[in-house]
Length: 103
Image 1 (cartoon, rainbow, N blue to C red):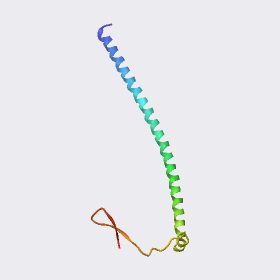
Image 2 (cartoon, rainbow, N blue to C red):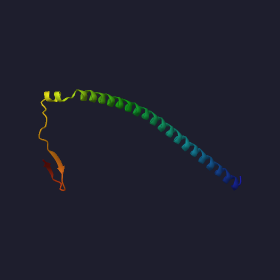
Image 3 (spheres, rainbow, N blue to C red):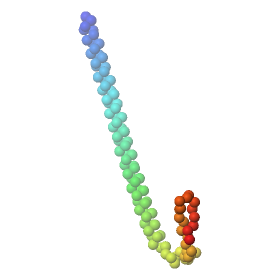
Image 4 (cartoon, helix red, strand yellow):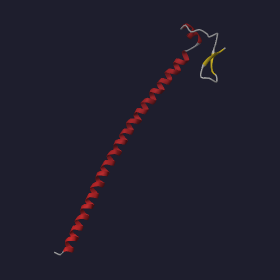
């Protein structure tokens, strides 16, 4: 065999090895990204279910709040010991950082 034929065989082997390496990297990358995609879809489903549960709990709490708010009246507050405020003082902020009472 002459030298040019040997060089041609070496070049063909190098090209074949390079193509096999590229195919292996592409296959591994494909498997990795498909796996990540499936995991993200599953995580998204779990998060959506959790959001639905939290939204339902918030709706329940809002309903409880509205029910409780409807039961609060002046008469009920008086039975608990609260009294009407007769001498009101309002706090204002002047040009300084000191908080004072305004009468």
